[in-house]
Structure formats: structure tokens, C-alpha cells
Image 1 (cartoon, rainbow, N blue to C red):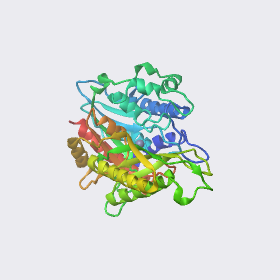
Image 2 (image 1 turned 120 degrees about the vertical axis):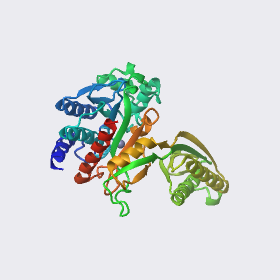
Image 3 (image 1 turned 90 degrees about the horizontal axis):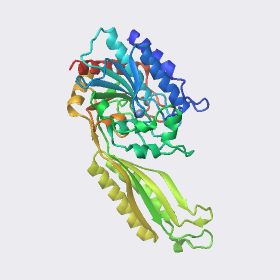
Image 4 (image 1 turned 120 degrees about the horizontal axis):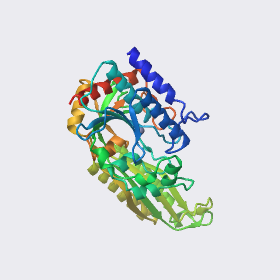
Length: 409
Ligand SMILES: [Zn+2]
């Protein structure tokens, strides 16, 4: 592992300081910011150092090619993303891109000659931290986000995605589904740090796992209506307080999700009039819910709604639930998944995942698969996110075996 390790270390240490905030130790690599451009330039250097052709596609995604893109021999693609959430960790995204270059190095060191091209990709704006929509680069490439909608997205300062791209030197007029490019791609394998502790549990205790599916995911808006009143003069029995209904709904959603092995989170809330000395008139809250199947998700959300309505009837309030977006389950290509498991090794655990990824978006247009590298604490989207170096190197070796098998097909 020593040779493989030094290559990995060199790539990792060159990227490590890019976009890291000195006070929090977290990363702020927002799409098309200076930090993002510095991470992109790291990618270009890594590609040039290896004599790989490097290009930015119409949608701002980066590609480094070992071999020449051609529809006659569709490429095996590996990589991830380089952008981050606010004060994110070092591994979410970058581990997949660094491991992709390191796995390519390993194949070359082994004297392997690929039967078709290998591309290393870094997809643009995966986290959606700046413009509020995740996986923008892969969604545009796959045609599941319209170029007009993408260009009109705005950040907190009112800067549109089109303006941010243009000032970073990328022409936003070319955005949109890229059939010419898709025709040159055969499969995408993304390595990612695990964002939970499934591999770190005593039962699994493995450095690398393979994705089974991505859970369906919904965002719902709940509007609780009551009557604004004086916080002092209104007797407790006389109130129609939507905050009370909201609070009971948070507790009940948590309990329902816990009982069903699902996820329910209220992370955003708006109160009107939002005054310390007033019973509120209205509470609007957003529920993020995820479950292992679309039926389980629908049942969970229905359960939350029914209990909120029952509570509202007792509180003299009303509640209305609106689905703002529901993403279906992603089942990764079964044949590719089976080959990936075989290449990684016998007994490799298959893991469901509750987070979105470019590999999930691209599953709509080509066979995709994911490898996960053990995360000892499971913490992600935080400066505390971590993977052991030894596990990262096992991940590189596993990825190289997967690529070898796919490139030989
Ligand atoms: Zn990620």
C-alpha cells in the first residue's frame, strides 16, 4: 500500500487547504466562488500532471480523460464533487475525486491497458449550498433541471447562477441536457465517504461498502393557522395557538419516524407575527421526510398529517400540508452493482443511503454505482467528518479493482 498511499497523500494534501475557514476548520467551497475555482484549478493540475486531457463541459462539470471520448467505446467514469456545504468536512466529495485519480495511478502502475476510455469527473454545485438546488451540474447534464430554471437561481446576495458562472469565466448560455456527451459515457462509479455509521458498527466492521439504493425523499410545507392574541390577557383556555399544534406535530413526527425506522426533521420554521408578547396567528414549518420505500414515505407523511389534524381540532387551529418536492427512490443498476460487489470482494455489505448524490441523479441516464468508505463517527456536513487514511487507501484499491473490471468489458 505504500506507493498507492504516497500518491493519495500528495493529491489530498494539495487540496486540503482550499476553501478551509481558519476559524471553524470547515470548508466553504460554494459553487463558482473563489474557493470553488481554486478547487477546480487543483483538478486541472492533477489532470495535467498525469498527461490527461482536461475539459469543462457546457454545464460546468470537469472531466479528465485517459483515452478519447467516443460513442463507439463509452467511457467508464469515476469521481464525485469538490464543492461543500457551509462549514462542511474535508471528505464529502473530495474523497471521491482524489480516490479517482489515485485509482487511475494504481491501474497505470500495474501496467493495465484499458479497453475503453476512463474519465475522472468533478460535478459542479452538488451540495446546492449557494443557490438552493442540489446536484445542479449532473441534473443539467441529464436534462432533469431546465437551463432556464438553473440560470434564474439566486444566492443570498441576489446574484443569479448565470451571473456567478459568467463572472467565473463560464458561459451560462450553453447549459442544458448534453446528449452528445451522454453518448460517450458507459457507466459512472462514485466513491463517497459514508454519511452514517453502518460500516463502523460491530456487525459490519468493514472499510468499504456498496450502495443498494437511495431512499425516497420529500419536502413538505405545513401551515398551522390560529388566532393572534395578547400573551398576557388571553387566558390559556381561550387561546387558538398554532405554535402548540406545531410543537406537538414535531414530537409526533419524531416518534412516528422512530417507530418506522424512517427520518423526519423540522429544520425550518416561520412564525407570524413573530412577537414575544403575542400568541401567534400562523406557523409555517417545513418537514423533511425520508423512508426506505415510496409507500413507507407516503404512509409516514400521512400519519404525521392525520395526527396534526387531530391535534389541531383539539387546539382550535387548522393545519394544511403541501408537498413541495418528492424525489423517488433511486435503485442503482443491479447488474453493475453486482459486478462492483464482486470486484470489491466477497461479503461486501450493501447499504441503503439517505442522502442524495450525483450518482443518484445520473442513474436516470446511465448505469451508476457507489462505493462508501467507513466513517468512524458517521458525522458528515461538519468539520468533524472523517475517514481513516488506511480505510481511504482500501477504498482506492477497491475502486481500482472495480474500474479494472469495467474497463475490461
Ligand atoms: Zn457528497
